[in-house]
Amino acid sequence: MSAPVLSVRRLRVEFPRRHETLVAVNDISFDIARGEVLGVVGESGAGKSLTGNAVIGLLEPPGRIGGGEVLLTGERIDRLSPEAMRHIRGKRIGMVFQDPLTSLNPLYRIGRQLVETIEAHTEYKGAAARRRAIGLLAEVGLPAAEARIDNYPHQFSGGMRQRVVIALALAADPELVIADEPTTALDVSVQAQIIALLKRICRERGTAIMLITHDMGVIAEAADRVAVMYAGRIVEIGAVRDVIGRPLHPYSAGLMGSIPKLDSDLDRLVQISGSMPRLTSIPSGCAFHPRCPRIFEPCAKLRPDLAPSGQSHVACWLYNKVPTNAEAAP
Image 1 (cartoon, rainbow, N blue to C red):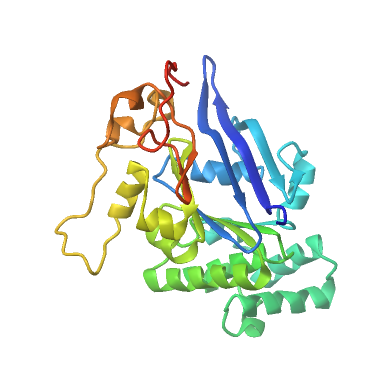
Image 2 (tube, one colour):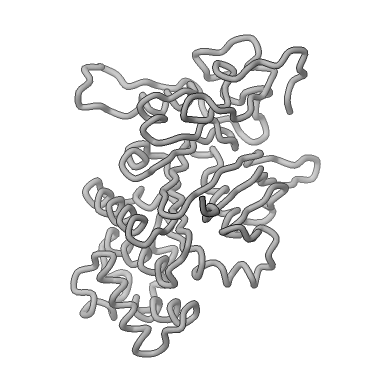
């Protein structure tokens, strides 16, 4: 077995304040293999985007990595200097964000932005870099790439701009692409096209993709495995067919129940009562227990760790062995 492209080990993201330190991502671990799409899903505030930003070194101050390791093909990158991390971003790690206009300079033609990225991170220069830029635009499905390479971002639709951003992310043939809500601002038909594009890139280039989203439909269509996050922790991780078809954690089951099904005659979708806790008031024990329909005695006192159950891993006392004479976990 080759080493995973991305390995995250016991990652902790903190926000220090005057009298306390808030923990936004708490002791999470996962791997992404070459040619694999790992979906990271959860409600707003679960810690999905913070995890992605921690991997690429883009945490907003005062946010910081408070513990754990981030390894890219076996090389630890969480302790690199800002300058060294900038070299890795764009070359070894590509990024696709929710709003393509945050990645594209509206004052520059897209060709200039692509060529500058290619020249900065590859051996291509001048005319060769421009030819590569045209080839990338064609690869991501931009019609008439050679004719439109000198257009400005505002001359493209939202879906076409997102294709340009994907081309930018692929400019240096990265090992890993982190896509943070890449389809949220797009209509359904364009979403399907972007998902198909990401899957094709993963299959043909062997790129590892971390796909961050709150949309279970996107996960079902695009991901190979899925990590479900709640209140800064992974509560379930496994193959997408297992987590979607047979969710173990009650929170995962609630998310799956929110997906409309054409063959179902239900009058109402499943609703998870309550809301994601604030960082200042994360409950003791299992953070989901105030909202959980299957709560029992240990849930409010003891925090479960991820443990294997069938083909998946789940952090839930319904499946984990409850320790005897154990004290409440922090």
